[in-house]
Image 1 (cartoon, one colour):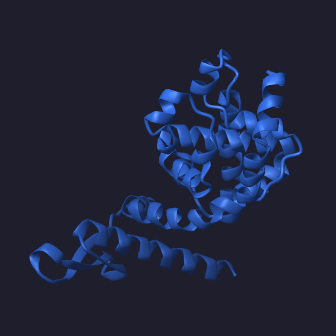
Image 2 (cartoon, rainbow, N blue to C red):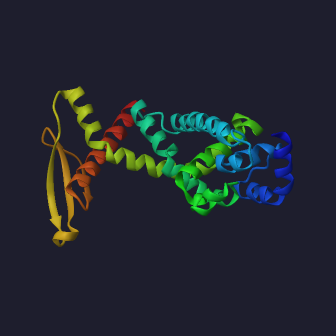
Image 3 (cartoon, rainbow, N blue to C red):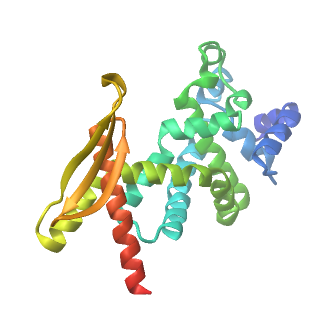
Length: 247
């Protein structure tokens, strides 16, 4: 493999350098980057079965779980374990990683077999997500934990806050009910304050009530989403009140 990798590095030096510029990281050992870009279909055609990016993908998957988990507990120490787990899963799933890969034009740099290349393999989410994990594994091997952590943080931070908000809104009703039942052995209720607009474009405004008090309100195109937003608003108020008491 060493000779083949060295040959590929020599042949692809310019394109590897272009990729380094896009991701903002220069490899000490370019062979690691080259290996991260070799799909199994290319290795098979070259009679190098198993000499591909799959072991780096395996490593990168583990590294991403660790680094993303570390980022999340530093940024959101108030989140429960279950919420952290869901948020991390949303960040490292195939769809999101493929999107990240497209953002750095990864498909253009992959070494694919002729058949895979002809069947639009450079845009397949499965290939892109695995290739992205392999690149993460290669950066870890080349530069260590602090280097790969800084790399992941730079690329993932813009997505983290948005996914956190979406996740918390989607799960807000159940979390609010759990909290109130645990503290008071009583569940909240929801009231539709208004429905506006034509039937195909209605906007619902909903309040969440508990013991005669409005805890929060929300507006959305569906009653269910408006209830989730109302619950999210109530949870945010509870967190703010808790923080005020602690200070």
